[in-house]
Image (cartoon, rainbow, N blue to C red; front, side):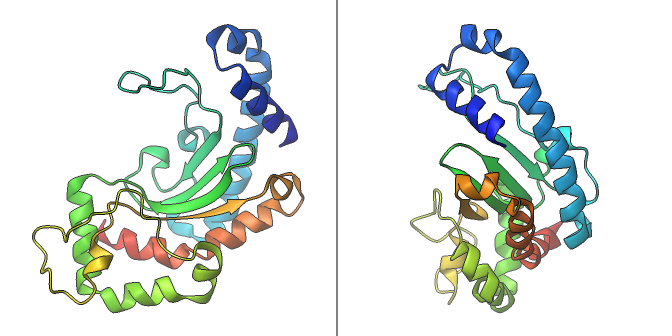
Length: 216
């Protein structure tokens, strides 16, 4: 992982096509190593959550090239490596497990991030009719230990339409994403304990993901 982080650190300082072309061999080396690691991780996570199946690593890994068409930030490359491990890979609408490696900003996350409107409505309906069970998941000991609470992202300021504003747990329906994150220090990523840490953190969200995936 240190070689990967060294590449990403250098890329952060030289985020341009000329430098990237000159260092393409380095990129291919760390990319291949990351794919091998994700394949290993998929096997481990499928053990604790068989519903993800056995997706191929390359189908879970995000491209390093940024889409800058509608962005004010025109830097061409991401400065992280990420993978979304779910049934169907990175493009799946289902809840899954997210691995993000970046110097000083690595994280383990999961759930469903910014779903399509029809999926979001179904999620809110599932929570509306089963709010007690959903709250129990959010209060579970290991869930709180690793995640604390749901990530707010661009949370609504008012109750969503089609739902009773007087609903006792209306706050649970005001999220645009149902996702969690756990930040990881670089030293942990470099250690032999990283994979067990990923397994333990992801294990704490298995029931959360299964609840979300009930709508599919």
